[in-house]
Length: 397
Image (cartoon, rainbow, N blue to C red; front, side, top):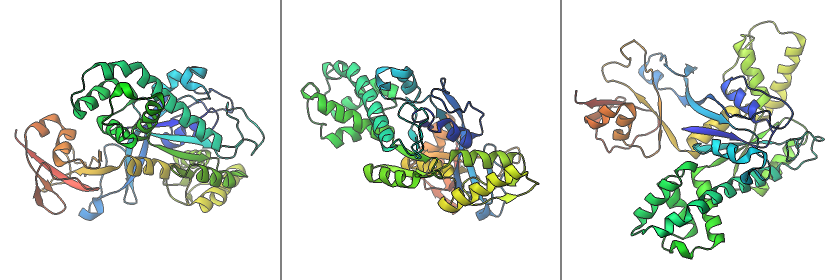
């Protein structure tokens, strides 16, 4: 699973990425600071099950604090996209290709209106950020349409005896943009094109299909960055009015990055997603004023910096993932003594057998039965997993 961070230059993409991952990247107020994509691990929050077993977990990856498990997820931050990106402007084709395998997109928008469509600094509030949402949707839709057009003759010249054959054929040729049979089926149904012969599709129908395919395969969350700056409130409300189909959340990437760096330096105690922090060590006047500003203008105003909430909602609400803990009925630790060491993110609708294969191919191939560790009940391979399940897989060998 991969989360793509997108947006125009200087919107705060790299700051958002660095705040989420604590990976040091180039951050500057000029276009195309990022050229090659940055990759790193962010985290999503899961209510840990350790308290239900009266133990303290010690994860192999991520961490757990105050009963909240932080599970790693991969993030990719690509260079800023500008109008005309789908036609190659600003190396747009390369940047779009970097997003091909992303499962969900977080579009970072400068909600303060202090950068124009090219990512150049302008007077605060002089640019309408709603235009940035519109242009990026159009560019990604055009990218999808271009790839669809390149492969179109393969679709209708190859006999498609059934809907299943069509889905298989399309998924094979559109895998480069991360299109799955499920997303293709959803897009076809949205356009009511499932039964229509491919050679009879009009350009408008193909463009509509490309858009629905993008929506199904690359759902998008809007991170309204710089939400604490003057005028951002009105801009965010306007964006919500113009794009009611999108989830638009206020955030401040620089505030989250500041808090995490202060916590790393043991100046404060801060848990991502919380609405406050605790001062641990002496702060100089500049640090004190900076943190006071964040507390008043970000945390108290929005309830958190928005970064963690956006990641959580992207994974659990938009991708519909559930968190599953491998465990045993006799012991909760692995061979090294790590208690509840792992937590896996699985698509909603996954079965116990899917989870067995996720753990190891041999577990799936040699599956016998499974146990719900919380209830001690035996469950079969077709049993649907629920969020925060603790599952023991019993297999041959």
